Image (cartoon, rainbow, N blue to C red; front, side):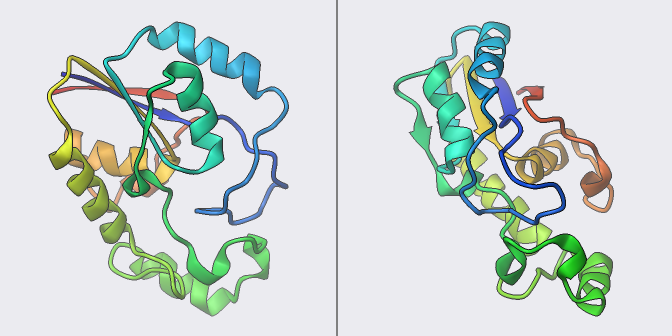
Length: 170
């Protein structure tokens, strides 16, 4: 099975804002970028997507029969969502930075919780030849951990490009 994880394109939100699961719009350039991604991927047997509009718009371009799944949402940053990163209490940020695998931001989720929900999604995938998953950077990092065995302690430092396509052969 060919499994393609695609990160949404750049959202229309000011730099430095923690947006996690906020449903933010896309930049005006998204249509042309979606066309480029679609041409790169070609046809898929099935397309799954995060329910957030920044992913659904691309999924709709790839297939009118796309399926949304909450397990494909970005990491939940809880009370920090919508705040500027530099407005967040430094002590809380430092604690989270040292414990992010098992601890989440206030009322948010840990990296392990994100990994667990993606593992649940992957277990439920039907056997198709080519599947596209439109999602977020955190989910793609979790996929690299689960499908390539990358160490959990290292995945958050990996750069995941807007509009990037990440391929796994299962």
